[in-house]
Image (cartoon, rainbow, N blue to C red; front, side, top):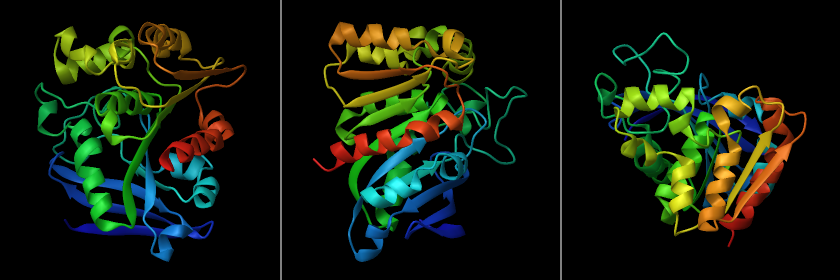
Length: 279
């Protein structure tokens, strides 16, 4: 597979790079960012943390705003951040920020016109890791994390594919998309009206029924404008109690939905993942 290097920046002894490539899964050109820690330059294959961003974001937000690269360099972890949806001319879109380009929701769309391009689940689970592992000095040890819509993606993907991920974490995830406005809009458009299909991509439903456990850490700010209507961490917490899922849920007074929150606690998340990736 041909990939095009779009930018290179040295950071904390490692390299922050951005690439473009044609995705067969999404039927369009995609971008992703990768941080390779200094250990990757010494012939060592390093583990990878996949980061999934939220609504309106791209592959750039986390790498530029989260303050994660210093810790990733120390721990010897590569970070891969895909874009949040297919993009480009001919790719279906919507006037709202919460549907279409920038809002892929990490599912495989089955409904027209979205099903031509919007297969973010397959892209994140299969195509992108295959490309990363074939191109860069990384191992097959993977963890996954994300924010908001990307937190939903990280939790659901890891619970649907527990054998592929050493750990999962999320900041301010959409925990119960079946019952919130963002989720209802996206799931109706991408997946149709069958709520049994929705349940297969709902973190709370998956956690309630889980029999295989992936170590999980979730952080949520209590001054988040979206907390009550969209995010519903109490539903995820209740689901974990049903299955005895070992959920670590941390609630933080005064913190909101922004990257100020993420940057405040990203070190804890990276050390959490490193602990499990190195087992």
